[in-house]
Image 1: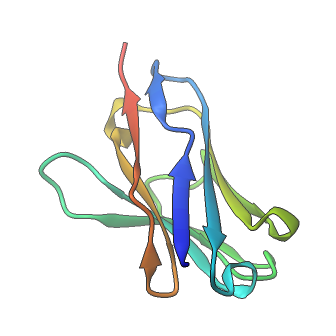
Image 2: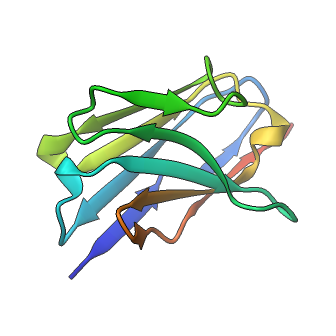
Length: 112
């Protein structure tokens, strides 16, 4: 059974940090490029960050570069998104994608 499950979202104050996790199973998650997307209310889903299967290459959208870090632990079939210096405009549902598979999303709200 194929599963992609995100966790770690929540409410955080501006300037704070959160770490999201994405666990994949039932397919070749550990060798797949994994991407984080986000969708803010009333906006289209946008790509935020990606990491190759080996973890050797990472890429970031300009809006998160320097604040977010994507990493992975293939022994745990898990990809992380460390988010620092969060801003209200980072508020969105964050989705994990690998191959054709998507998770259900996790809500991140940045507000004082």
